[in-house]
Length: 520
Image (cartoon, rainbow, N blue to C red; front, side, top):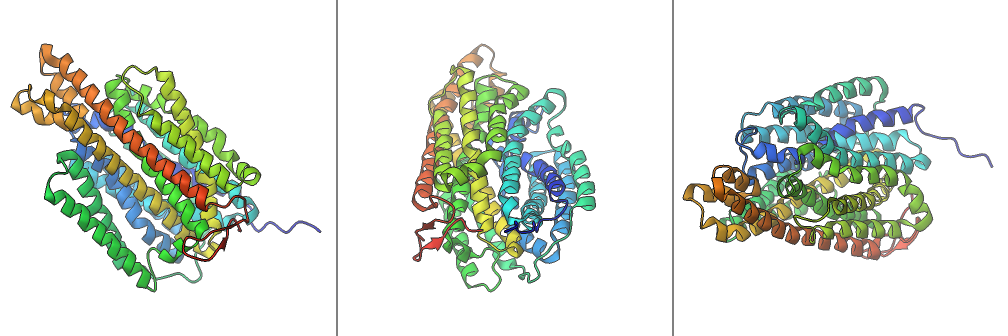
């Protein structure tokens, strides 16, 4: 019997290349900022941003990204995915210019939010176009390349950021986006075909507003508590208000005839389980990447470029293992691959609970490689499971949901683990702060960057303050890293319980009936 005709687009591999270029710059921006945080915190060479403002400069991007993915996924299905991709690229490029020339932390936070809105239009469009231009038999390989590009962009972000900061001012980490975006716009217009859902849903304005308000309120409460202490009633009131709004969002979506987030999708294990795994691993990984940059630049004294290069093993592991993950799933099954990947990630995250100011740097390099290898074997099989559980015409919605969970988890990871770090650092510095002049206590107690700035004005007393700040930071890092590792192990237990042992296996459904997993 002759093989079935390939239903993919004739230029599908060239289209994939264009989509990867478009995706690289958006995902790269989630990590390129990490190596610039110390510079942005500097009152002379940067903007003098506080610890909380630094967290918001990261989270304003991811929250806008997560909050608008629902809407832009539906709009892309309705108005055209190529059109939405082009709109997103233009918006992202303009917002990058605004970020590069921000004059204060508030302007940077606002411009970063606008960049997140542009990214929210780009991300679901790329994945839904892949699902439409590739034959189902080639889709797993294409998604593996797409997922590898996500991991590569995350890893090369710090390297590129460090290289730029060696030669230019901090705004160059955003300005570099503009020529890449220009190239992407031209290639998308020339090569990518238009596609849309023949039966699109209406835009759920109320749902989008509830999700954005809930996420921002919850994150604000967590970051504010980490920066100023969790002992104040207003912090817990804010956190509780965010949880209540998000609960209202879920309740509203269950009753809506055109939900922004179809919560019924989570009744399908081959959709819900991989979404949960991606959320858990990005929660842990992004939180650790946030504070590891400070560890490398402050405690260890590496330059931004050296810091970026230390992340290189993570990128190498992504390049090596992501393209082969699909064949690993076929050979060993999605459960084994996912569990091993999550356990590798957990080991690498747990290592930061034991690394200190004198740990040989080759040990850090090894664990970054292990983390990259672990994440490379989580993203592709999870993403393929998510997309294969939906029909092609709903690809935009599926992509939006999965990426929303990933971005939301990343934002909460930075907020929660960053707040744990900030609270631990502040407690560790308390005895030392009593010996400082009143005007220096707030800056030195807020963050390790603030302590280093104060130390520059203390003269002979500077080494004592720097030693205390390093010790307090490392102790706080140990607690945050241990929490990240525990969360990732929890993901491994979820995969062990609910991921199918092999493609096509029947797995238990958490809500009742068994479902067929792994079918395209």
